[in-house]
Every structure is written in structure tokens, then in C-alpha cells.
Image 1 (spheres, rainbow, N blue to C red):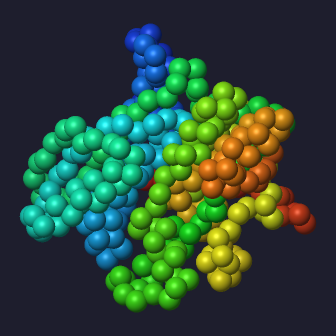
Image 2 (image 1 turned 90 degrees about the vertical axis):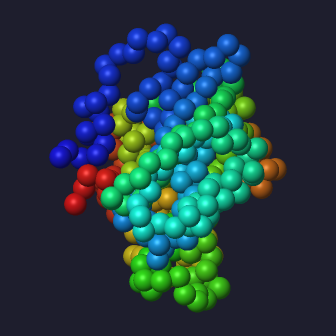
Length: 327
């Protein structure tokens, strides 16, 4: 089968029939025009053995991450998450108490954003557990923070340090169980198991009423930056020395840090672009809210793609993040 992202292009309609549809397939979520507020709809699926195992996530954490992935897509559209629906396919190996913990994990995160569970479906399966979550949200009309909004001379920014989640997963897979971790290791593991979407940053960017291209970092920074570059038909250069790192990740070799930061994914931070003239005001607003918006690159004219400037060398960054159809 084709590359995941190329395959999605083959099933994407060339046009849409509903005049209220602003953005369909091709961004973090669908955007639908409403009477006063535009509606946001997104869906994400987690499959046991593909996205998680019971040695890397507890049932509670499975629920948390399933909802977090969707809330992060809402954040990437600058929206407010409101409702969620859950479809779950249950194999015989999962017990009722474990399933209850999955829903408790979702409910605990939903509480943080005043979200309501409004429906779903439950079926049995002979295969692995499959959890699909749909989230509905809203954003003020005209605030389209689409991947296709980037323009030459924009700055590229990110809403926080990246790579910690991939580091945490690496530690979990290395141990093959959720055992004892050092203080530094535990920080990385928590970022993988209980990530928090950056809804606050998305809301500030939306309310700025500026032109913003935005993506959430679910498949890896290199992959998400490439998506913006392709959607906007621009070239993006990331500055290696500007990439924000947590204190925890700096305990590991540089090569490992790069792999986790650029290709790891599941950080659920936001990466985007905007005019350099508009950035300081938005950065200041984020700082007041305790969010560190950092410039990590620039947008230029050129062949769509992403370059990494290491100071002494420049290299091309392929998507190379998580891709369901890659080997």
C-alpha cells in the first residue's frame, strides 16, 4: 500500500458539496461554518499492538491518550473542545475493570476542559482492542489556523520542548515493563503516558486574529513541518540550536535527542508559522499564560520541504515520523 499520507490524498474529494464545509480532509480536523461559531470535528484511533501495549500504558493512560490526541487536533485549529464520542472494539482478554479505567482516563482529562461524553458504540472483536474517539469543538468564525497559511518570511515557532514523549516510550520499551524509573526518566515517561494538549496556546493564536499556519506535533516535528511546507507550497528551515529541550532530555546523547525531537512524535505541542511582525505580541500573550512560544526557524520561497540548519551544515529533513503504512 502507498505511504499513509499519499494514500489519504487518493481518498480526499476534489471538491465538497456542503457550502458550510470550510476545511475537510487535509488538516488536523474538519472545520464547518456555523451561525456564530465554526464547528471543528476530528477523530483518532488507537489500536492495541500498534499505538500501545499494556506494558507501556495502563488502561487509564490509554483512555487519557486517546482523548488527548483529539483535543490536540482541536488545539491546532485554535478551538475549544466541547464533546466527545467513543467507539470501542473489545477482545475477550480485556476485563471489565480495565475497560472502566479506559473511560476514567478519558473522563479525568475531559474534566480539565469541561467536555462531555455524548455517545459512542461498543462491540466485541476477536482482534486487538480498538479505541476510536471523535471530538467536537468550536472556534470563532474566520479564525482559520490552517496548514496552508504559511508564507515566505514567516517565523516558525513551537509551543514547548519536544522529544520527551519519544524518550519516555524508548525507556518503556527498553524495560518492557512499567518498573522503577529515576527522577529524570520518570519525567520523560510521564510525557509519553499522560501528555497534555496545548489548547491554551491554540486559543491565544486564534484570538490574535493573525494569519497563522498551525499543526500539532503528533507524528514528529519533521513530519508536521513538512505537512505545513507542502500545504503552503513553501520551504521551511529549522535552526537546530533553537529547538527547545527539556532539562530531562539533555541527560541523553545528542544523537538520541535529535531522533526524539525531530522524529519521535506524540508531544502534542503546536508548531506553526506567522509574520515576524505579529509574533512578539502573540509571544508576550503566551508568556503571560505560562506558555513558552519559541522561534525555531523561518519560511522561504522554494521547493516545498524542510531543511535543518546545524550551523556548519544544512540537511534535508524527510517526514520520517510515525507513518501507519511505512515498514
